[in-house]
Length: 178
Image (cartoon, rainbow, N blue to C red; front, side, top):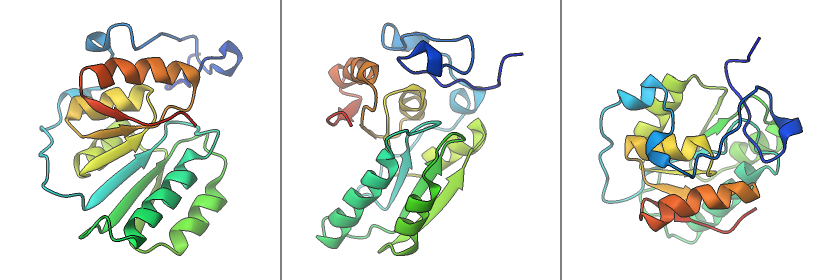
């Protein structure tokens, strides 16, 4: 039987379901869960108060932890006045919970750690955030469909291609690859 979700990577042996496609070729036709198609339009705020950090199902390089370090440094330098909260979503295959929990325990603002959200729960978390920091897999398209501004951090080489399509359309801000 096919799992209800799939990890889409550049390596066929990493696939957990018989599905693999290049979502960058035609982003207009990316399949979206009903939670993203039916959500209310996101309202852009004048400043960032809440950030969603979500690097998909596994985040094998723990970019989540590195992103928390970067946000901490930005807060401590006073570059995010009024910033109050980080929502961190850990996927079902994320293996470094301990390090992320340790960072969250001693953080300058509230960190709301969540794990293995349903599509509806993730859409809600994204909608209530001012900006999302994510990888350039399916979550990037989902957050963009909601109208949530995205900073995109490619984790796999194929993610660069995906993100460049939306960067060229001025939809996302693309960082360097991890």
